[in-house]
Image (cartoon, rainbow, N blue to C red; front, side, top):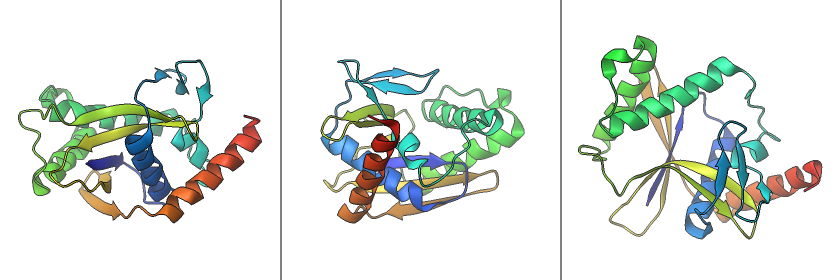
Length: 191
């Protein structure tokens, strides 16, 4: 399994924690979850509100989710990349600045030999999971099946003029660090 997280900003240490938390969600989590997209709230089927990986990591890395321009642009770039993979993107209708991100995404896929033409039905896009034991949730950008049984974690940093891939090595220490941050988050939130 290849887990890919797309970024349109600069690299930070929190991205490694994020991917390790995602790996644990994919391997030990449950995809039977409810998600309120407008308010970005995950709930279990019993109605329990679950903190997202990105909200938990705000404790150590301040992300400006209130800045609508950057949040909306990032979401739009993600959706365009997914639509391009599925052959559903009208390239002529995309603003040139956004199109550069999408073209770099497709260039990345081609360079890495990740077949998306025709759309690979085994590829999962925007799959949501929650972890019953640790009570957190998250959305995995892309999951590609691999021939090997090993799970690989890749951060793909897209810029208008380039892309960079960072392969993250999962370690128990990185995941345990995330769990410490999660516990602190829950104490602060009173959950």
